[in-house]
Length: 196
Picture 1: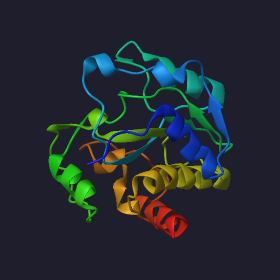
Picture 2: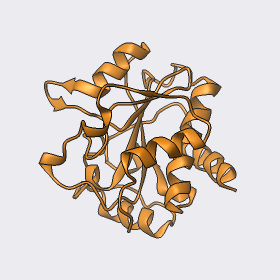
Picture 3: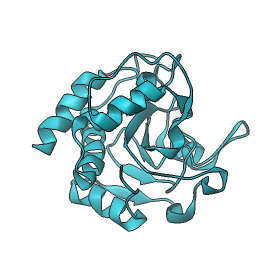
């Protein structure tokens, strides 16, 4: 069980990992905390945005849309490898997911198949949205994949977690496919290698 990093601690962790970070507005106080608690935190969740164009992607992830208010994550990782901080605290990114998956993340064990949605993930996960159409054809530039690896490793390093604390939305909530276009097992291997 871990308390969330402070906003400044989160920013420092990302920069210490060698990331280029863009602070968007008053990201430190932009959250959904009035809807429920954030924490204890147990892991990092990765997503794809189903958008193209960095400015548009960052704006949507910060502001949300009529059916889902922002922020939709903590950081947006654009194709150029920059991490745009759009919120801090509870964010609308994980939704309801499988409590068996949560238990596996906490224990840092292999993930079971997600077959139910009975636990609020927005409370327990840091979220990174990654700019991609999510159609399986839109490329993932190496600069972006490296930034995803570094961002996940940065949070894990600060909390003393292993790469098993990094999951995809598709591994949390039945019916989700994101992130699509790269393997979560391969990404966890990259994070593990970086943490060594």
